[in-house]
Image (cartoon, rainbow, N blue to C red; front, side, top):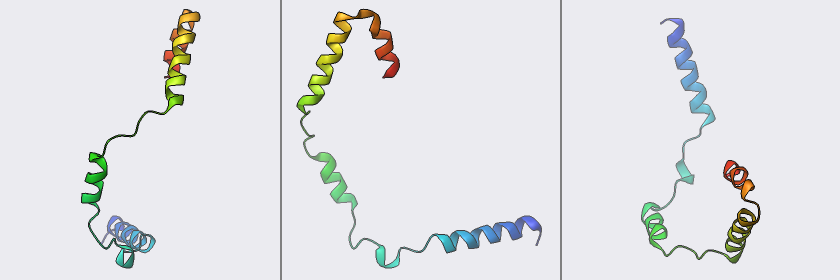
Length: 75
C-alpha cells in the first residue's frame, strides 16, 4: 500500500465521520410528487411594487436617456 492509497483511505474515513448517515432523519415518504404538484400550481401574481419599479426604470430612461447604459450595466 503506497502513500497515495493511505491518504485516500484516510480521506474516506474522515468524510464518513463528518457526514453522518441519514438514518432517522430520512423523510418518511417520497417528496418528489409533492414537488411536482407545487411546480404545476399557478404562479403567484406579480406584486404592485415590481410594476412600480419597472415604471420608475422606464421613467428614468425616458427622462435621462444617457442613463440607459448604466442601468443595463447593473442588470
